[in-house]
Length: 248
Image 1: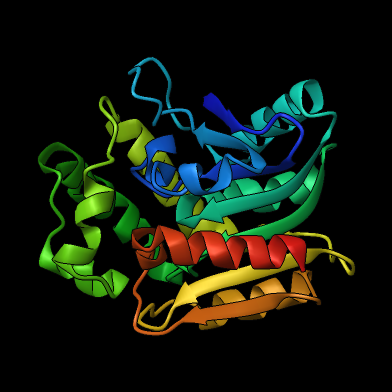
Image 2: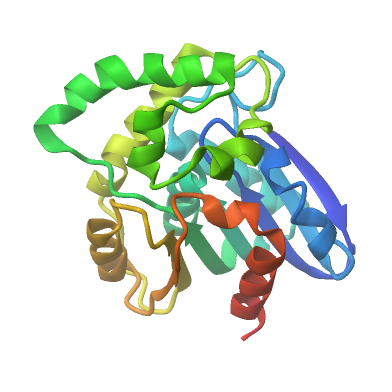
């Protein structure tokens, strides 16, 4: 795991967790909009740090490493945690099981991908197809439809894919996605959590229902006309919405 720090050493603290196949560079256009006034921690999970020396295992392992980092480097607290797609699993587990305190949390695109009896088939087929995306840095038409995305909408994200992502890491991220909402989580009555998603995402109704059962104060934000992860193509809007939630 790699964690890069930016910005004002005395500002409110924000940690950014990237989506699948990405790394900290997914936030390259967001960080300059935050770093003048805020202290920013941008994470690359194991398997996505570009070194080829680490492997993504599971969300709980990543949450544990984030918790240890926050305890050691941030006084055991962060003002806001922003998680995009894949990052939502470690974020949820960090808040539920970690020692560190999370002031507010935004879960962006925490899709419900549990297809029940089809999970085994998906796990045997989809990681290989996604590994092809990593090698070719292009997204096939079926994947774009699944995400409610367009080729243009994915172009910036695809340019941020790090080197040396292994098939093992990709398979592990699929296991996280398929099983995320099977994890038993304690109800957090006071948690300030927001769920963001694009209007074109097709796997959010069950996710919202599950998240509301865990976070009764859940705030919803649907971005009109956007697909999965498309808010990342609009850094000014993303930053504005992020800071509104942080400072309200």
